[in-house]
Image (cartoon, rainbow, N blue to C red):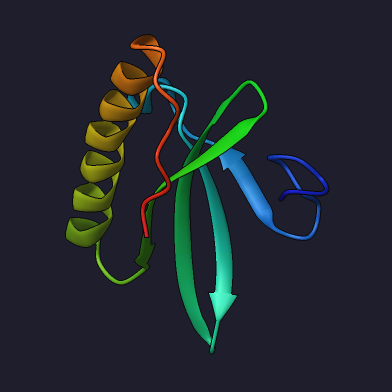
Length: 88
């Protein structure tokens, strides 16, 4: 993603519906398991908000909720003018 931007052709990336407020989703396959990565793009930054293994609709719903909560936190940090911390 660093080289080809937020919508690389080698991954299936799609913008999610309006009620998810601009989240984008990349579907990856790691060790024969489906993994979803939720992220958002801010100018020249790609912020990964949540990564989860695709299993059930309940886990997906919780994943989207976590990503939206984290998106709010990131936007508050950015509004304050602070540099985004790297979270490991």
